[in-house]
Every structure is written in C-alpha cells, then in structure tokens.
Image 1 (cartoon, rainbow, N blue to C red):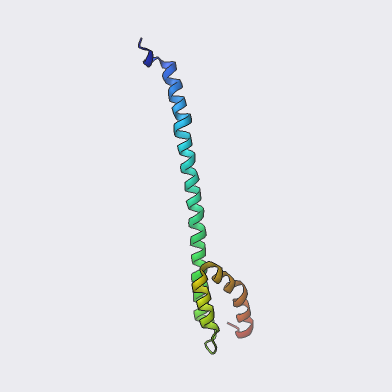
Image 2: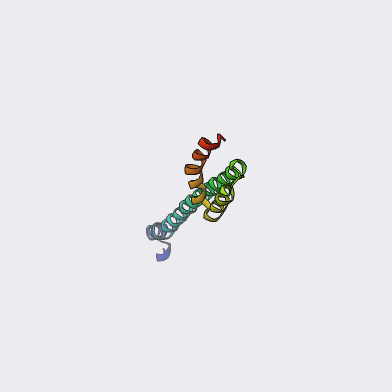
Length: 100
C-alpha cells in the first residue's frame, strides 16, 4: 500500500487541517459577524433616535423664539448624542412648559 494513502495518516492530516485551518477561520468569521451586527444595531438605533428627536423638535417646539432653530442645529450636528440630549432633557421640559 502506498504510504500517502494510509488511512490513519490521512485521518490525522484531515483532523489537523480541520483543527488548524477551518476552526480559526470559522472563529474569525463568527467574530466579525458579531462585531458587524453590534455596529449595525448601535448605528441603526442611533439613527432612529436621531430621526425621532428631529421630528419631535421640528413638530412641537415653539416657533416664537430661536429655541427651535438652535435645537434643530444641535440635533443635526451632533447626531445621536444631540438627539438623546433633546429627548431626555428638553422634551420633558417642553412638555411642562407648552403642554405638547
């Protein structure tokens, strides 16, 4: 029998190829899948918060002074952080002041 076709040697070679070739590749693929999923959720969630804050500000802020313009600019230029600040700080204050 030819030595390269010896079943135990071939089996061990396939095992080591699987262990050191496929498993690390699979681990890297799973890592990047989880990383990109996390980034997608964070960016997507931030964009949704940003859009909701912008709509709420444009629709409900008083147009008598410059607060609407200032808050729209803050939300536009600071993206998620500005939208979050608006929704957590200014919106409850606006509801107390204007009732809307």
